[in-house]
Amino acid sequence: MSTRYESAKAIYAKLGVDTDAAIAKLKTVPTALHCWQGDDVIGFDHDGPLTGGIQTTGNYPGKATTPAQLLADMDKAMSLMPGKKKINVHACYAIFEDGEFADRDALEPKHFKKWVEFAKERGMGLDFNPTFFSHPKVKDGLTLSSPDEATRKFWIEHGKACIRISEYFARETGVPCVMNIWTGDGYKDVPADRMGPRMRYKESIEAILSEPFDKNLVKPCVESKVFGIGVESYTSGSAEFSLTFAATHDGCLPLMDNGHYHPTEVVSDKISTLLCYFPEIALHITRGIRWDSDHVLVFDDETKEIAKEIVRCDGLSRVHMALDYFDASINRIAAWTVGYRSWQKALLYALCEPSALLKKLQDENALTELLVMHEEVKTLPFGDIWAEYCAQCGVAADSEWFNEVKKYEEEVLLKR
Image (tube, rainbow, N blue to C red; front, side, top):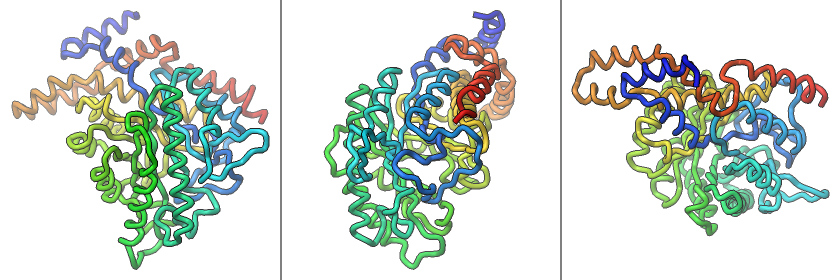
């Protein structure tokens, strides 16, 4: 334990913060790392373009194109990250062997056996996402809300298959699986009928959730989106739709992606409200610039505010946290690592906030002193707490980790 850490620890202690306890707590809190940063959201079940109102920009060399490459890249990235991890998988990342192929409505647990083996070997749980995009049976940009019954049936069967796979993940790893339902269904221009697609969407999700599953093992979620590329005017799964669906269907959680709201909205302000009503909620954590642009997460104000709200609400055991961004313009290993380390920093920063003192000042209406303390906290020696946490987790606290990324790029990525 460094002298600098001991000094910083004493400074925090004067404000009632136990930094040893903060570090110990964070080591127990899992965050799901998304597999799709490593190959630009392509997956292994198709060769077509990315569709569904989302877009990955850039063409940095070294993209993973096989399951072995993607798993190796994830391993490398995770070796540079402190903290407890889960792995988040999309259905399009099914791994087929010996020439076998199954369409999305016919996926089985065996098609994800390698993901389970990978996770179990590393003592990690798995989260899962049906893939309602980048597929020829997305008809006119619609899946679960399509007016075409055959289209809806295909995607409902896909969702049911994903329920079964999610339960397989949970039983194999011993960790509950968060299964997130999101579609890019919507319209480019103003629709003549807003309610029809939403009623079909509602009935389709209900059909998916009619698949039997153990609610202790599978945590189904519904995720909203305000708009997407090509669906600027309307989305079937709006914020109001998704939140109301979760609130009225037992065992279904709301999932908020902080890139899926109007630019002036912030998810940090919504967390406390949802935790008043839901035993559990889920988050996809990203960084939107002007729109849902899925930039690499950084240690910025909103990221810190989201983490602080989770901690202030005593929600670390109630909020399922996952990262969700994809940038093909920079080294993908570095993108994973920067984003994950930034979220770890945000959580540790929140755990080191003197929240009891700040709440006391608010309740006493000592608002001048509250403002003063908010500003004082910003320049506490947090960097020394972060360095100690990284040291205890066996990773570099500073940018030295990037030397490993550059070496991996030279020896592995550039040779693909």
